[in-house]
Length: 611
Ligand SMILES: Nc1ncnc2c1ncn2[C@@H]1O[C@H](COP(=O)(O)OP(=O)(O)OP(=O)(O)O)[C@@H](O)[C@H]1O
Image 1: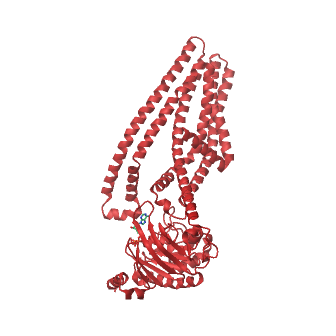
Image 2: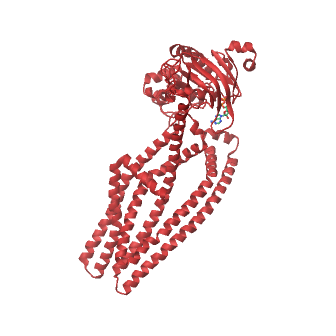
Image 3: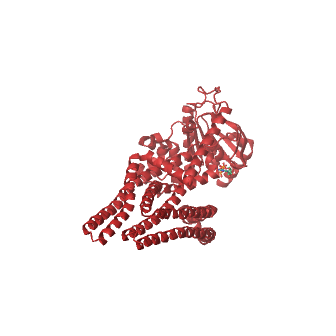
């Protein structure tokens, strides 16, 4: 019950914060509407008494009044709905924004690797839609409470024993909540199975997997697996539904007995001459209203219980963020954040121009929540203004190193020094503002083409010249020409009939995105040409080698790229070979070939295959 009360208070506060005026209007309209219902019952009693006594004029006036009240009840409900519906939408938008803040609330990705956090995010995303109706539920509950109170007063004026009628409705409410808890536990117990069933359905219908599924004729196997999953889930749910139905029936039985008792009591009083026919009609009408009110309240309470759970999850996301923040503060105090750096003019400030470069000192990394060492004791100096190629087998740790350099993860031990300052001591947001990137798993922003590219530098997203320059640098002009509407053309089928692009074209736009920031201190291109043909990749790297020399001269910026194609890798000023999380060797192409180590072996192997 405490959770429901807290949820109701939270929802009302949120609604008042987003639109106090609309909320008050809805409360006023609903109060009048809800109070009309018991008054209608009183009117019906007066009408019956007047009609039976042949006081036709009074009967006509009363029934006219009842008709007006009925219309008012419906109209006010309708107008109240218009108000609270909009307040509900605004409240949901506010909570959506809060969710987005929690997911993106830290510069790193660590929180998304925490399974509990990721699970909560998924559940909140699925359930947030329900909070839209929470404002309505809370107001309706308030209205029902008022209505029941007035109904009880009217019943008590007839016979104090009739006050037991609304009380007799309480067991069905309590039992209803118990039944709901049973259902929720069953849902939670089968949550993993339900998610698996949904995942299988998504696999069988998503454009990304459908080609392989069709060619492998895997749809029957997927359906069988989905059926088996669903049978397991539905067995658990069926048992819970049966028990919940039995409990609810028991609760309703108590009320049914009280309902029968109330009618019998008033009929007996009528027989004794202590109550009129109008009173009998009044009690029958009010008893029906009480049962409707109680059933309504039980449903609304169940809904609010669900909203309470969503809010609990949101709170746990919020707490997660605070804990992370406190841990970060403690960490930076421990490292003595205030110690002035030797090379950085302002302690903790991102340098405007990179002078020395980036140094890795005994850098090791383990993904949070896992025990596997991915990078181990890396020591490396990447000079300012140079281009670096990272090579190594699949799973060697190249992308992981890239993510660490971007400040998306913190080293488990060791340091990354930017011109001598520990990256952890630089404001993460400021560092990331000087990083331009294209990741292996680049995003397909299904937006306008201008936005898809411009998001690489949000401040200049609408600057057509800046976007065109980035397009030109990435050689994406032909894509712009082929999309109807050019820069203003919509991409993808995500929410409209935009132009669908090939994988290589999406990636080329990703490249353009990475060119939006001028003079980045670090440009990372993680297999930026995996979806491009060899000639296009070669041309792009040649261009980037020249560009990085330009950027290097201006800002000392480093261009770091990951590639498996050695014909392009050889252009880099420095090549770093990673082998199972360690630096196997580093140097320029000539030095590494002369060394006749792992690089020379892999290079010669590719040369033999492709020439
Ligand atoms: N978010 C993550 N959580 C846990 N482990 C991860 C995560 N991302 C990557 N790994 C693990 O880290 C290891 C290195 O992955 P990484 O992507 O850095 O390799 P890579 O050298 O870039 O490989 P590839 O050439 O295939 O892209 C892999 O074994 C992978 O399973």
